[in-house]
Length: 260
Image (cartoon, rainbow, N blue to C red; front, side, top):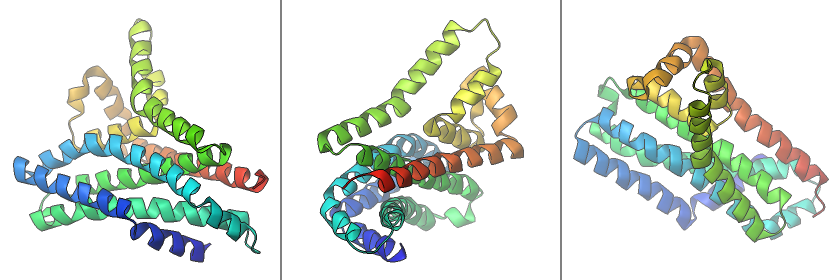
């Protein structure tokens, strides 16, 4: 698995898409630091970009890599190598290369601007941790979609729909439910519904660490009472780990059963 991971990782790192992805974050964070002249404000602005763009790129890139490397995958399957090792190696190669692009693209400008001498270094680390988690989660979901659909067009379509649902539609349905059932106690429902969406969970984690939960009103107070505590932080990180593990478990099952 390590050899396949190493090959996939260096193959992706040398691709132009990785350079474009890295340069986008490098340019964006440099411009934000120049315009805001404040590290904390730049982190808050980057939050919205990272929360939306990282899942989208992770999903599309994961699906694209699977379909583009199908012939190489079939060659590997003809060798005495476990299917689990092949797909886990490819997945880790994709997720690690995407995470590295985000880490370096955001990290270099902030480091040069004096991040390590500021008091918001912990907030920046939370942003990076969330970006890494989202890269791993949506890369795993992308491999699940690609393994379930031989047709490339269907695979890309389902990938876009998945991102659209979790990034946009889920929030709309959640808001409608809150308005429709506003006369009932919704504290537990609000917390549980947040755990079922990794994008919302990541957004809440960063907002609370940046101490701007007051912008969320009454809902922010509920989130702060739970996610603002050590127990809440551990639960939310544990849920993000589950969001990585469950798709990986299903990916291995699909790979073992699939007739290539």
